[in-house]
Amino acid sequence: MSLAIDVRGLNKSFGDKHVVQDVAIQVAEGRICGFLGPNGSGKTTTLRMLCGLLTPDSGQGTCLGFDILTEADEIKRRTGYMTQRFSLYEDLTIAENLEFVARVYGLDRRRERVDASLEHLGLASRRDQLAGTLSGGWKQRLALASATLHEPRLLLLDEPTAGVDPKARRTFWDEIHQLSGHGLTVLVSTHYMDEAERCHEIAYISYGRLIARGTAQEVVESAHIFTFTGEGPDIDRLAHELAGKPGVESVAPFGAALHVSGADKAALAAAIKPWRREPWRWEEVPPSLEDVFIHLMGQAQDNVQ
Image 1 (tube, rainbow, N blue to C red):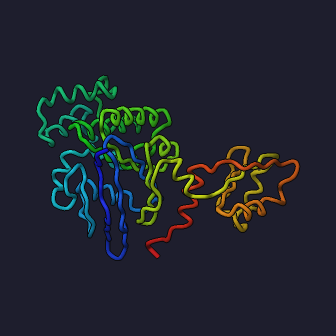
Image 2: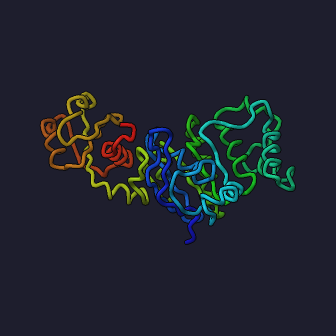
Image 3: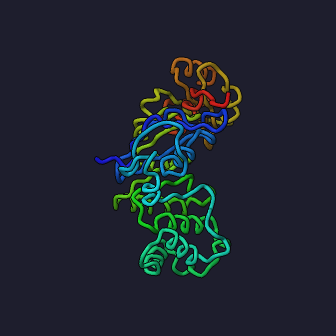
């Protein structure tokens, strides 16, 4: 498969902080790649380097077949970028915002394109509503319409569903998969594990370094961690007893159950052994993606220190 993104050795510093360190990433055309990591890990900086908004301090590669260092303008014309915060004009209507975007890109058939976009994303009945009066989910739809109006080949989404309800998130992801099915390549940063699992593949960056890559299942299997769940009366009260025990990397209540994970299975089993009795019940379960990411965060070195 042809690669829409093929970069290596990306580095970027701001002052004395090395924000992105030797990142290499490849994404095939038409694929959805989830870009995950804690706040401040370098996700946004990497996205901006890929689309030409930031110039890497070092590194090389191509995006949509264009050199990221010398042909950034060509990449920008063919890329849609949806930022973390709503960045359109709140004192313009939905239609006026899209008409403005169409003029910025110098598109022909502007009215036709705007009408089609409004209809496709269910915004037609709200075309004359001021953008500033929209709820989070409707603003999200408008931002997506804006980012795809010029029919880009690559779509970069920076935490696009933060602050919207579950139904709006699901509708958004259905649309992303539909766009991907028509050949659009998508790189999306997210903190939601259910969204990560909807991606064709994921990349995990922590403190500027890319430390895991593959499908969600491949990343979970390669982490080599173990998880036990316990159930029983007031089992959530055991969380503070288990936290910090040898072998216990994370412990968290999940409803009426307690979720305990770590990389050393024997040490983990020893930690929960005092409570492996009635009225509590324990069993080993497959680790979740969230378990893996907490483990990876614990292994990474803070680039500020």
